[in-house]
Length: 192
Image 1: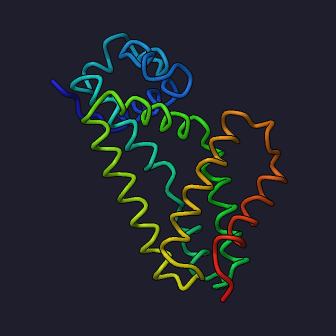
Image 2 (image 1 turned 120 degrees about the vertical axis):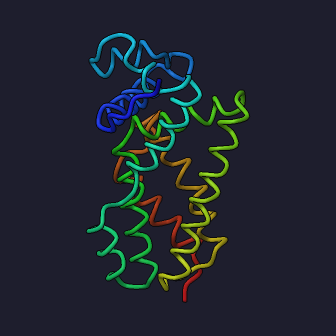
Image 3 (image 1 turned 180 degrees about the vertical axis):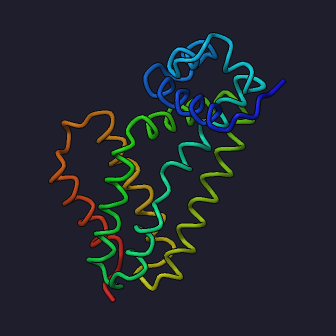
């Protein structure tokens, strides 16, 4: 029987994200999630059909938590339409993702685990493809400079910068990270 207490389910999925980030996919067990969430042993098994279900819901929850809030979206829509504005948006994006360290590390773990689990690979492939497509569509509608290829190149470059920040934070300090994001936008996005 799968339970329907949405708050408890969200707390368990958030606990799963923390376990994934700290222990990796192999450490993600129902018992570890129960312990992280501070609930009685056996609780997670009442909310998730199996470990794959838990992995997939954890991945979906990370994306949900990474979405910008309405105020950020409104500010972005009201901002200028030049490369400097674009660079500022990208610096904010990298900062937002880097501030949810455990979420991004959990996504990395999920990506690695997806090499062994076809169902998870299918789900992540669909999710990442939809995310890239949504970013391209948002960009094209925004009037910002650059094309779909620039969006995809920035996606690839900035994702690896985020990996460096979260796994080896001493490689690039925050100030250098900001400069690198700006340089990536300036070099990838053609001047109008």
